[in-house]
Amino acid sequence: MRSLTVLAASLLAQVSKATVEWKCLDKSFNFESPVAVDENGDIQCWSNSGYDCYAAPGGGGCASTIAMGAPMKKMVCGCDIMSKFGNPGYDQGPNSVCNFAQAPLNAHPPTPNCPTKAPAKATCDFEHNDVITIQSHIAGTYLIRDPAGKLVGDQFQPIFHPSYGFQPPPTEWTVVDVGNGRFAFKSDLGTFLSKDSARTNAFLVGGTDATSLNVQFRCQPLAGDLFALLTTTDHVLSRVDLYTDTLVTTDTVDVTNVLAQFKATIVQKNPCNFKDGDSFAMQGDTGKFVGAYAGYINDPKVAWDAVLYPEAGGGAPRWTVENVPNSDRKLAFKNENGAYLGRCTDCAGGATSPHEAFAMSVEDVHKSPQVQWTCEPAGVGGQIALKSDVNLYLSRCVGCVPLKAGKTADALVLKETYWRNWLRTAQFSLVREFVPVWKCLEDADATLGPWANSPMSLDANGDVQCWSNNGRECYVPPEGCKATITSGAKPLSKMVCGCDILSKFGNTGYDQGPRSFCNFAQKALNASPPNLPCTPPSAVCTFKDGDVVGLQADTGEFVGRCNGCLRKPRTTWDVILLGPLSYSTKWTVRNIPHTGRITL
Picture 1: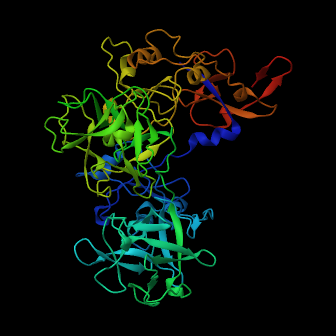
Picture 2 (picture 1 turned 90 degrees about the vertical axis):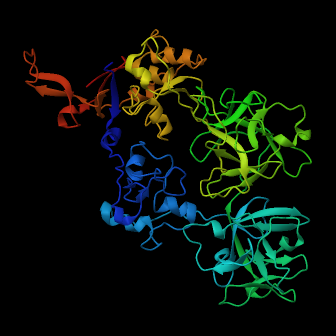
Picture 3 (picture 1 turned 180 degrees about the vertical axis):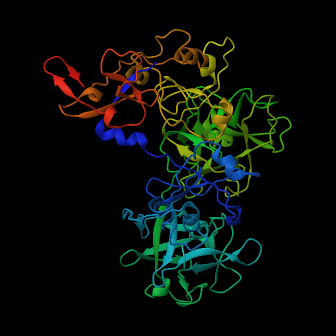
């Protein structure tokens, strides 16, 4: 199929746009993540989360990562990192990848000129589960849980630190609204900023009980964007002086002292603030989605297994939120089959964890604590964590639950006591837009030939699509269909049956018989594509006299004139497909009046 695409001259430059070239740094850098220079000249590292650099585990991590195809998220020094961490990365010293990767990549990043979009400021306008930083008014330092200042047991010393830094967790506090106008401030470890009952006028970070009066504060607004924090005994949180890093309470209420005046920045609004009927997919740390399907777990006592990475033909499984009334902000999550995500104890034979996740039917959500969840913010990327009625968090676990032969999904269990673990197995991203789930189809009769090795899925409208990197043919990956899907890569272009293919080839794909991948995959995926009227791509063919265009074929070559290129030509100039754009492949448009036709 050698259909021609007409490209306006203003778009021709995009054809030769360079792709990103990922490279591995020398072992002396001790940095396994691939790095590259983006189109603006900024340094970027490979990222699957958008918040840290990624390298495949095991030996040869960098090369193995590049073989995946493309990163899932963007992590670019300059304005991208500035929007996430408050600094562009280039000002973080020689240990920042933004700096040490410049020389080996021969890069010359531009001076960042980032939009001045400041994070939302707050005085005492906190909401439950907002994530904030607390900054001292006079010295510009941040309240942190001192990682090196461990006291007794799991208690830490709170201090003011002079740098927000590239890794924000110890600096960020999750607001817990405990009622009666009081707040508690939860650290990255899940423990609270608290009065120290053993030391007079001292504070610590420890304890997990938000009902304890020691962890509760009243926020008092002051002039401008300043505020003070008062304990339940009306003592004021303050610094000792301008130079030391410890905290004490004063003997008297004196919020006029600059040592007791603070600023807050809302780093992240509460991602758990759901309304009834909100719908989304939940994506785990490996890029797979939370779904409920029968036939994955080896010996289940409940019909629907809750697993990550369901091998379905449609989009990522979606969950609809129900707020449980009079339950202290409990939530329930219902799937398209009407089953609720829930905890089931000893329901999977051979499981190493007593509590497994299933999707189950219940008569009354209000009276079923096993399907009620507490949502907590989990990470700077807007992720959430779900705490069950037994105070354990939903998390993926490889090998914790025996699966049936041939099944490769990750089981979901309840075993983590806090969502912040180094593998991030208890953190889930909310994906509100449609996400296709790609599948490898079985072509037993060799109907499609090599095209059957291209991943297939349904798009948001229910149309069949194949994996494509050029938008004009299905891509057959040399590494195999399943390896392409599990790599985390994404197709580079769109190849969707129906209106998309009609605009490119003059047919919808569904009208091309059984050898069309549209019909083959429609049957295999049990799809019901919509019968939508397609809008002709008239705007593409709207030219003015004098427009200069190129005609690009599906091979990437351009229609051009050539003298003596054919063996026995009947005219002086032959018209053939040539290589890159040049003087001989550009055509000037003349419109023929009243006919809708043009000459070139």
